[in-house]
Length: 470
Image (tube, rainbow, N blue to C red; front, side, top):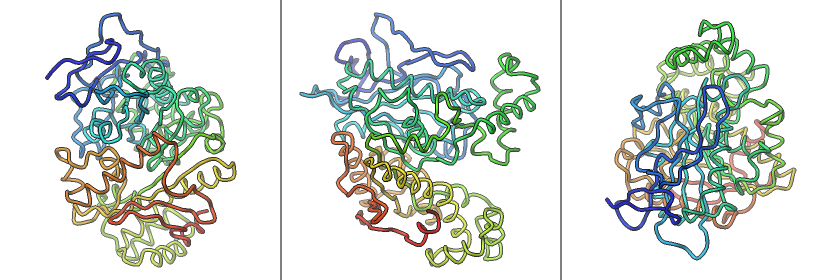
């Protein structure tokens, strides 16, 4: 391994070959507990960027454990970023792909293997940046939105420094999945973030997670109760493990566990109507969802993964007062699904697809450029139980279908290679040109690019379901 530097010599990394420079663990900010990030000023000596920085404090979830995350290197001091850059100089600055991980705003790290940007940087000839941001109580206590401020601070760092790595600060595409996708949409609405990115790409954004001021106040009260504290100042003296324990109790006892810790529409950092503001943002925008998002959770839930028709009806009754109509609609539109899969199909649309549809509709009303895609490839592993579940598309968009361990979750073969090639080309097309090769979204035809065994453009997919939700 040979030491290498960025073009101005201010950051040092190591690389295995001459094709790619990988800079890990660059500190972009510091932050005291429950305080906004403070941009980090680098010393004159070259910054040694050899290893990933600490991951945000969290209790690893199911997906994080599947992806190999351990709790060996969690720390409140976690505001680091990584840069993957082609080693060769280009006649023009390269576009920048700025990645924001998901994990429900309580899990995630830029060091997860699926997020390694090496292959994506090589495949797209772009600069890939991945960041850490604070999670859970440390990033989203009440209406503080500290985790979102971390993301904006990282974007500002990229704006100021990415030229040294061959990147174009005027051509930054933010992209993210799940909570990362919801972060992308939130950043589109955040006034402070606008100077620092040009385009946005949201993968399976968990738009339903956004919190209100009232919800944030209740979260703070619940956290204080479970932490045994009488006010927020007392939280400063508690150990991080005590805060994580209180956070878990808030989530476990909440009637809305997925929005217990999430960006809050506070009227300051984020507008009170976040989606309206995002819809009015004229920057080019791509949004996509997976067909079977919710199978990731439901198929591992022993209470719901082997339902008969009666059990599925009872599950739907807990979710909607239109359970009978939903059962008829989804059994008609998904005739090969078993009862558990019908419930998962409803959850997938309720939690992800309907929000994407509504945002696309709002953006068309504002005459802003948007494109829609749908990932429907059925995963063959686990006897096909997961289908095209949540997060399944990530290794393809990162061109990481062949990395060690990926085959356990996504299998291997020519289809996987094809999907990876197509997904990376989609990102490259958007990063370089700010558009896609398929038509702009409109509510009349709803042109949607489908990623499956055969990738293709589809008009008006699932009309019956669209009419139900929109």
